Image (cartoon, rainbow, N blue to C red; front, side):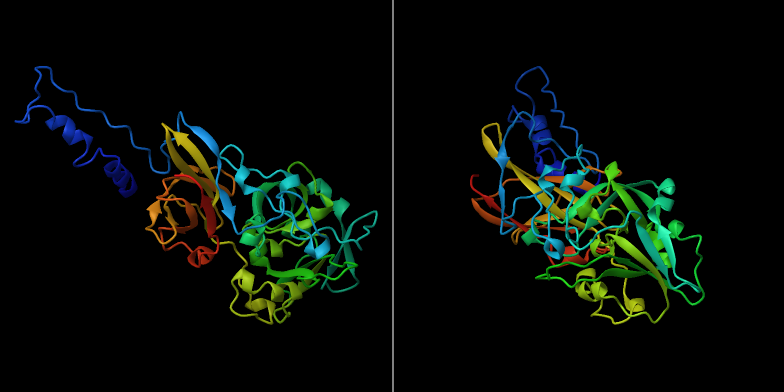
Length: 405
């Protein structure tokens, strides 16, 4: 029996001092049953296997969900704003183990379609940094090679409580691997990296961001991440706000690297300066300071992370109970050793309900708050060998208001 299963077994009252011993010793004062009929030993409820959850809410009535406080006042899954300041926040509370794909119309938006972009009849991507005259790659030449790229998660590096952590989505993509798209050009001598740029011009200045969408990658980073030029989302062509007709997707990296409206690919060398976008998002992608050269940037990878997406309020056998439902995502692998804490209380193990092929897994925790009030909820991975830089600083903390216990 695992340590977690053993702990739950003891807490259930079926361990030492619990129902098993009481059943064996109940009745006569000398330890023998008072009846001639032997008293059967109660059969304990089977413990969930590691990674499974006990259903303590069967037969209960879900009364609704408790409210997260201090978060976005914007309606979720409704686009607002324009250009660099345009947003749409995904409603993560809708997730459940049978519904882990974000519909394209609900997939988060961090920047909306540039109003100055008037695409040509044939979308062209300039190929720069090659010897000889300038070369163009036309999108329609790539379309016959487009294939499914699987379910991929994307998270904005600025995904915060003010966005209800809704700059996070997962959906099915179609496209072509970036390195496959440029294989016919070869890598010119002296080139060690590829700069990917997208159209990023607007008639109105941004209140918060600097125009200039581009990121620089090593060829190994593009290969290992499986970066691809995306043309479709959830079985349909990309929408304008999602980068139509073509955008970059870098699985496992923050969304600031997933350039929309790709219009240039440039082969660059070892001394290439960092782009304005790399400089702007350096602190959000775990860089050491703000490096001036692209070669000094670490991969903008998403670490393993976890947070609650809803707190369900139930009535079970006349008592009020709460089920905290959440997700984990990011990192190289999932873990079944997440722990949860309410306020400054002790850390408690939780169980995972879904280890599917999608980029996030679901977990849940039965919670009985001691009193009404507002509680902070934080999580961590019990395996401290897993890199969890944002969890380590409480980045995904959420506060929930409890009105009845």
